[in-house]
Picture (tube, rainbow, N blue to C red):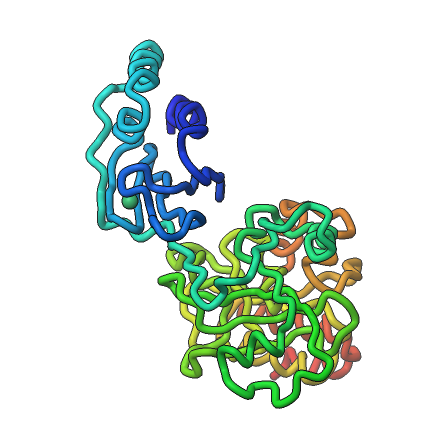
Length: 341
Ligand SMILES: [Zn+2]
């Protein structure tokens, strides 16, 4: 991508309402063509996104779609002249390719049932909920789709009547939405901010769907990491989380990463099943003492270091069986027996 495109997008950005950078090559603002919603001043459904080597604009309200060049021209024709000149001087071809409109990314994250809740990104930086989340070093680009739910029981009852028969002990939780491929919310998880038990409560809205987190972001054509906790999944590339869900239905090139919990019979059985299904599993090496990926990050490991440990400790098939039997620390004799079998 030409840096000139993103440079000029930032030059015109003061003229774009609610302009926000949402990701590495994703920006969001109120659509200058349709003005977005007249009723709601907070709606912003215009996106600039990258496709191959160029930036394009698309509005999820009016459906307008065009090149970044045309967007700049529409917003400010004077700045557009500078843009054309700078591209010309740097040798970038002036004719932008025609945009393709059959694109499916970015998934538009509707607030839907979450309207009325504030995202962590929208909270003041000293808000206790935001402070807790930021202490966990959750990537900042994820904060726009994590929410503060002040009264978790009451909120849930407003969606599923009587889900919590009593509001006694109601308390705030971090709300983590589970979205399907189209960005629709079909479940959500409430994570306690403090010592409230249970630490995680997962609420299914659409009972037919498996509780898999990250379906709106995953690229199924690439290797996929599968972890247990939604927040953990935010630290790795192309990673989803299965919140206690059976992931037999998941297809693709999967590497399953269990939490690094004390080795108990239940977990061992699950790991064994995963290996038998031919999936790749990461078996954490002994020197890693942290219980999950988020703890590793908080302890100072970088994403690259963690991904390297995962790659180095991922096994499948016979190799996985061998490593697993070692990992379980079963004694020499039964290990020998396992290998003979
Ligand atoms: Zn529009």
